[in-house]
Image (cartoon, rainbow, N blue to C red; front, side, top):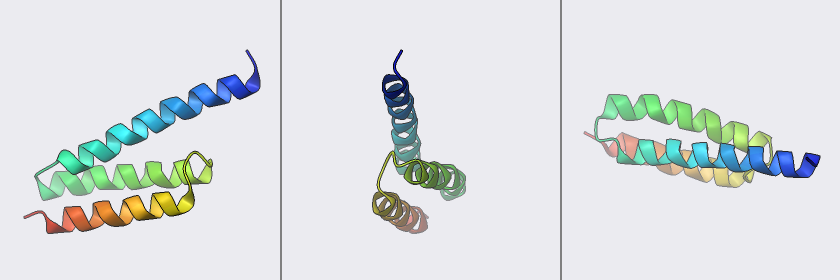
Length: 74
């Protein structure tokens, strides 16, 4: 297997896991649980940006929007 193909598959898997983490934060209705999931998702976003899987401004925008959403929960 070529290195590029192996990397592509690893990136796809990570991106899929990242999307699931973001969806978990968005679907949470309990603020405490949402905060826990937000911490995990923010870490994953930072890691994805560091590995150039997503752009760093994309990660920043997602973290900002998720944080605002979690703060609005009651």
